[in-house]
Length: 559
Image (cartoon, rainbow, N blue to C red):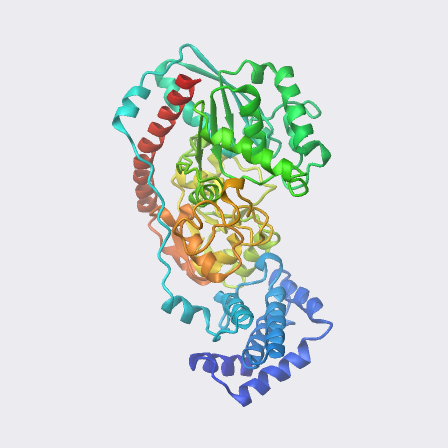
């Protein structure tokens, strides 16, 4: 394997030209190792990095051999089918969600973006190029996103709110942080106006006790029970007509919903739209998930349901008593494509954390939610340096963790491996001024765009449009070279990844490899980074608070 690695490195320096000797070396290795035992051998590689045993399987060598072998047989349609098969086999070997994919951090001259470029070239009958050759020659201008404007006249009007004493709100959603964001922002300026904000939360189950936003005791959470599990189908009860009937009943049963002065809703979109239609109350929608996430379970099978869904959505987005915004730019582009309604992008400030960066330990928090990656990334780090050599530990935060915000803000830094295109956890850390380290784009693409994603899903499950926009969407692609859905190609992913908020703020620390990460953690000016983050956050806060103030004024005045 060391001999093959040396040959492969020299071959890559030449641009992977046709070479019968190199092909024979790679092909021989593929024939020897790419048999029925291959997936079992891959599990041995996991043990190699995570169970402290001698190296027993050279996974990256096999992946490199598959790439070189496949790259040299591109030709006829039959050859292209074989190329796709071999390249996809190599990608599969790198684990679910790329959980074994640390090729950038190794000495091997092939990466998973190279494998994907090979697949795309074979499918499109194009010239095969490495990722870096393609990226260097094909520029990708970032999407232009309308800024959040501050109209001085509107802001002046909003300083006098049409409410006094107490404002009763009901906040409906499924994600605790996303739903707390608008409530917290309203509280921020209502406190200075002498108005008490009384809020009852509905729909939240995930970590609701940790955040203090549970709807009720188990079995006494009607909205949460109707919506069902966060990542599962909600069954017949979530067909549109039964859902409307049940929500109408819940509004009558629940005093906090029935008597609310203002409704706040974040997800699912269909629940927000139905509640707005039923109650006709002043309404604030703060959206962070795709509009068709948790769609009615009869949406696909019934054109009448689809038409009714889009009527409900149009009603919410265009009525004078409702104000809507999104927390990320990609969702804004998706909704614009689906409805022709341009919603403002209002970045989350995450004031609900009530914590700021005060490091009291040298430990670093590693945040990852993708299947197995939090475990394997931690294992891979140990292949470069032990905790004793580093002088600090990586503490793991995943879906099952229960760190308080104060505890997380006491860490020296946080490393985030993004599992989506917008993460409330990113806004939480950034707002607390905790130095954030994230992988550069070529690595992050495969983490943020995948089949199980929501905003960044590679499937076409959200590519539905209002009937007036069929079949290509409202305004085509709105001036973009690629649609903001079903992110299947490298070019499409590279283009849209640029508008993730961690690429739009100024002070995220980017790393290219694991060794690069460890060096950057060692050498970073943490006090300076935190200070610059604080200044950036203060500037953003002025604009965002003003928007929320105007939004509440408009909703209450027209309602």
